[in-house]
Amino acid sequence: MRCYNHHDLEGVGTCKYCGRALCPECAAEVEKAVACRGRCEADVATLLSLNRNALQYARTTKQARYLGPVMFIVVGALLATMGVTYKDIDVAIYAGVIVVVVGVALLIIQHRMAKGLKA
Image 1 (cartoon, rainbow, N blue to C red):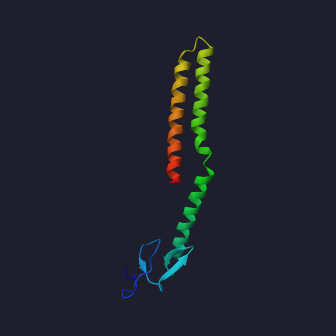
Image 2 (image 1 turned 90 degrees about the vertical axis):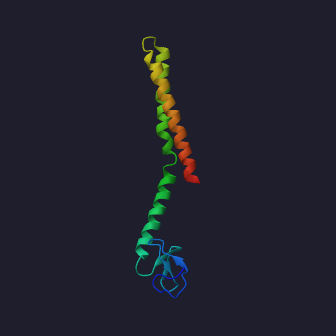
C-alpha cells in the first residue's frame, strides 16, 4: 500500500474518514485513529465522538428497552383478569391474551436485539 500523496513511500495506515493510505509524514493520530494531516483530523474527531455518544446512549437505554413489552404484558394480564372476573365482558379475555402474546413477542425481539448489540 503506497501513500496517497507520496507514491514512492510506503503507507503506514489509512485515514479513518476518507480511507486513503498515508505515510508517516501525511498521517496524524487522532485519539488512537489515523487521519490525513491537516485535512481530515476534525472529521475523524467528529466520527469518534459520534461513536462514543452512540455507545453511551445504548448503555443508558439498556433497562428502558424492556419497559414497553413489560407494559403490554401487564395490561394484557389485567384485561384477561377483568374478563375472568366479570361475566359480561368475555371479549376482555381474548383481548388480554392477544396483548400478552404481543408483549412476550416484543420482549423476545428486544432480548435478541440486545444480545446482538453485545456481540
